[in-house]
Length: 603
Image 1 (cartoon, rainbow, N blue to C red):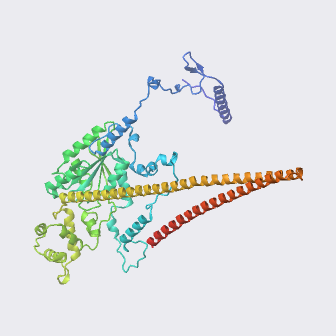
Image 2 (cartoon, rainbow, N blue to C red):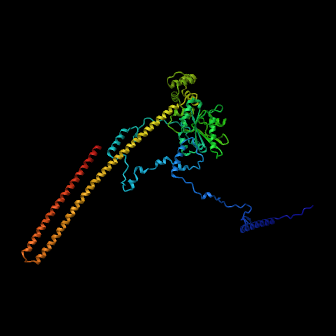
Image 3 (cartoon, rainbow, N blue to C red):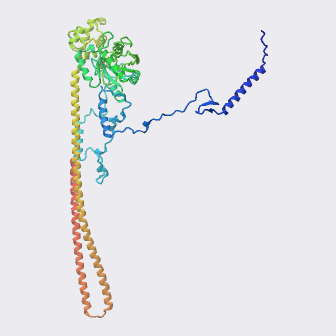
């Protein structure tokens, strides 16, 4: 079979074909823009739509629901207040858990006490009647002392309580300079570790604070507990007493009893082979996972001081070495995520230390700093010998008697063979060994819980006494203020009565003056009339008889009598005015004398 011969395309033909193809594609595209989609009876697009191959997308629509037209849930004010009280009591209890928090209106319940304190209660200072009603008074400044005597008493108290040591305004020249703490003793309080800690707090649902059973209150971090209460109250908080094997049973039992008043506490001994409290802790975590069944998993964060045993607790729970462990502080440097079960995850956190007023010796004995980096450590042995009983030191080191901590170190150096040339003991090296034994638990020591309980009771008593004293002082001040206000009111009333009496007397004088003025006016009018009558009579009756002369003389005598009466009334008014002036001068003199006496008492 012979194949047909194909003509060879030249370059011009290829170009023509390409141009034709492009032209056809353009025409199709333009037609597509012009054409409209054809729809079915149901409204579905059949042909002619732009991108007709893709399925038609219907507009989203909310499904109608009859609950829209029902009544909303309402609550009475009394019921709301009762609900608030009940919820507040339950929120304070660490053993209760809120389920379905999103459905409970906790925004109605949460009212910060700090905001309440900041709010001004104006009615306690000035009542509504005294400010707005007819009984309103002029606003007076609120002073600590309303009278001069109270002011003098306050000045005397301040003078008696004054001491130069507490006065900050005095500039003192120091002969010596206080030593600055080494940077080594600030370990565990860097920004890096705190950022790691806050990561753990944010990503965990349950927080477990690990404490050292030998000194649980010393290795506790109240700052973080307050932070969790304020900012993350929905997270569960647990205290775990680790290293129970280094402490007698009665002390752990008592510490659990004391700490369980604030948070749920568990005793624990971390070891892969021979552990204690492992089952109880796992059961508790499983309970939390059941409570949060709406979530896929739960994360548990371990926080606390360095060298407390956080990573060793995680190893005991997982039954294998998952985290790095060492009897030295600062082994874990970054947070680690570990799976315990399908629904429970564990988070390991580096040890953090909140900056307090602890001395260098206290920081070393808590196990926050490594002994090799501490430098000169001989003085800390003195505190170890104070805290530990002599029997325990004799059993551990075999030294029966010593005179002071220096003699003890010298004898221990001679016994262990840690000497320099010429038999000089290496004091610092021996002291490091003693502190290392303390941190690892070779020297038996623990804080007595009963002593702590007694001290807390005494502190609470002192606080109550101080509060009662403050309350009594406030009550007495209020009483004094009330008495002063009453005295002021009485004085104001007396002054008002005096002014009223003066005002009552004034109108009488005014009435008398008006009567006198009226009499004067009448007399003047009569005089004018009489004068006019005289002139008319003289003109008319010139040369008339003696009768008219007699009448004129009688009228003149009457006018003279009226003038005499007028002068008498004037004299009486002047006498009354003099008496009123004398009274005022006497009152002014008495006030001046009182003011002089008060100023003499002041100075």
